[in-house]
Length: 456
Image (cartoon, rainbow, N blue to C red):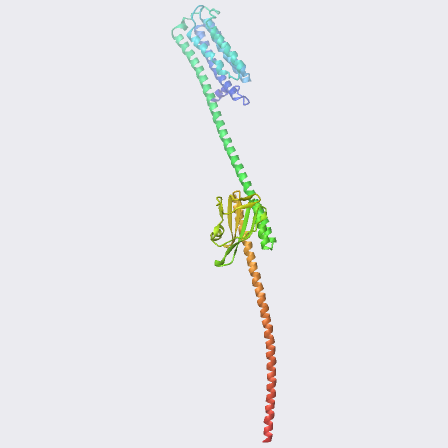
């Protein structure tokens, strides 16, 4: 039973149809079934009380069945027009045949005609303007001429049964039921449309939220990609710098020239304005930080500067073994000199050159622009390589000095050995001469002893 009702309700529904059309088709099936039941009910009612009018509601039965068949065949507009016109025209004709000429309209008929006049707005969508206007115009015309067409059909019938008594109450009740049903269907369709609109709005909002989340995720991914590309660019930049300055430190044997190339190369590579390199000289309390190279505005600067540990910012960095970066520089601290004059830099960076926890020197860089963090990190790493190079050079120098001292000592030892050898040879010759003379003396003594024995 439920399956049959479901099939009847979905008669003529197609998947390819728009949603609103399938909704109207289902509504048309429901209204058609209701009209069919009303037609059968009124046919039976008329057969008992007004036999001459029985053919009118009976005619509605095949017309409504034809409307359902048209719906099934896909002729949706014609089916709905038939569902609208059939009860309106039959109700109009039935009422005119029931009342006598000059009589007042029946209340039940008026209510019933009003209920049927709502069908165009139930069965047609505003997107179907032509059938909506046509069907609503017919209903409007039927209501307007409901009293004007008085007596155009004459049957010798007694309509008093419909004006008072149980039949009157029943007819009014049926008319009111149909009227309220029509209003309810309109309200139901309106609620369904509102719900659908709300669902569409919620779906749209969810889609917008999903799109916003996707957009935010894409923006976040794009930001992460840009950050990754920027980090990769910075790493490539630092790697290129390490390679470039490593080549300078490996190929240059002249310490003075190498330091000048390093300092000038650093200024150009990081786009700074001035740099100076200080090396620690001496040991213990006699350590002095002496400037070995200074470069500014594409030329080497010749300046004499030295500081003790703890003296000035250079000496402080030497003691603390931590880089110092300042952007508020005292007016008299340092100047960057060019052909345009002198100016105080905006940023100053001092990096200790540390190798094996020993500070080999300090690198000082000044610029009119602040230093970015990756530049500071690069210079800190480069400072360790420079410190390692300085430490290796000093070890090599010390080794070379010790080797030269060892060679000198070896030469002295060889000379002393030669002198000792000569002295030993002379000593040996002296010993041989003394032995020979001793033999001669012994021989003379024996000869004297022999001569004395013979004389005695």
